[in-house]
Image (cartoon, rainbow, N blue to C red):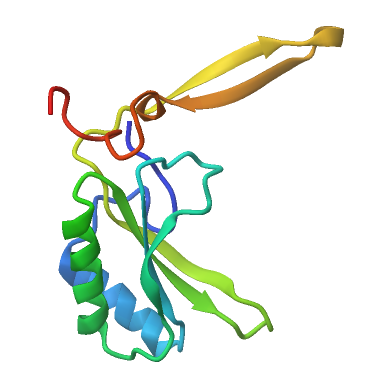
Length: 143
């Protein structure tokens, strides 16, 4: 199952050239960039780990690509995304967010159904990857 989060999530994975183009677009709009990673891409997990500090004063897409590559190298079996922030409204708002790396295997989610009182039905999602320990969720089996 392919996790679809952020802009471009329904498109094929972006190449480094396409990522650079999007980063340059964000920088051209004056949006600071940050790089985040996680091994738990649950839709409600909005607090991913930040790789380094947000790059508020950086105007060079190549420098941001170096940061993205460093995160990919440090966490080869995690999801990695780029966020661009827009503060024009008086608060930090995510203007652009997209995945730049995903694990080789994405096990997907299960939908659990629970019947409650008064004939109500509740649903929750469960990530199959969450059955494995943190840091090992997307490693190939047997490693």
